[in-house]
Length: 248
Image 1 (cartoon, rainbow, N blue to C red):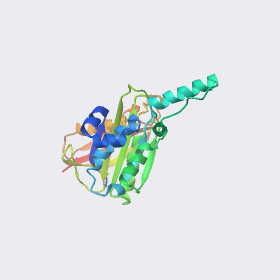
Image 2 (cartoon, rainbow, N blue to C red):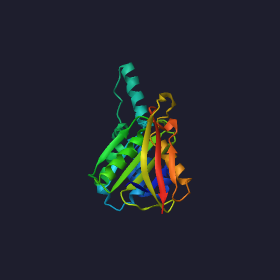
Image 3 (cartoon, rainbow, N blue to C red):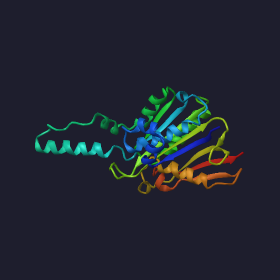
Image 4 (tube, rainbow, N blue to C red):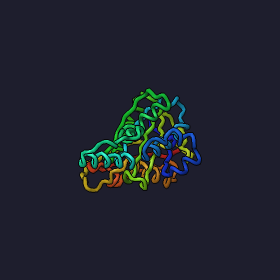
């Protein structure tokens, strides 16, 4: 069995800096998607029953990676190559982190000394549903008792861009899901081949945010929730339906 026990969504860095200065201190060096992802992951980890070092971690890399600082440095290098002068191409060493796809997963593992199962996915549309499948497989096999699924992305790698980070904590044992006060069981992730490659919107976090919104609107105790993933949040190959059950 796989139960959703906690979730967090973050999209405001200013709020994180003000309300959680310790979290901000830990994430400030990273790019926007990773900052928001880690802030969400740190929050849901507080609901874990197991030692965070033993929680399985599945992380989705952003589809819009990097940072404005990193791309500005790239423009300096490119201009220097054209002009034949690479004398002033020094980079802030922390900016090299902004090109690491599995940065959120690595930073989380270091923060909690996590040596459990870790899987990095991402860089393409629809990876959230593969992440859900991986979480369900690990917990069903009894290899871990809890698993974290986290993702973050941004509109583009610019200073003005909006970003979103989301984290979901799952357990093999039934526990109330905070916002509903009821248990939420992940029943299945179903796929049906229906290619629509031009309909996708590559964004690592959007699909999971949509799922959480559908769950928040589902207030019928004991009723099954059948969430048909919008084509834009799919991988462009499969039509995905996430089936969940809400009960006491």
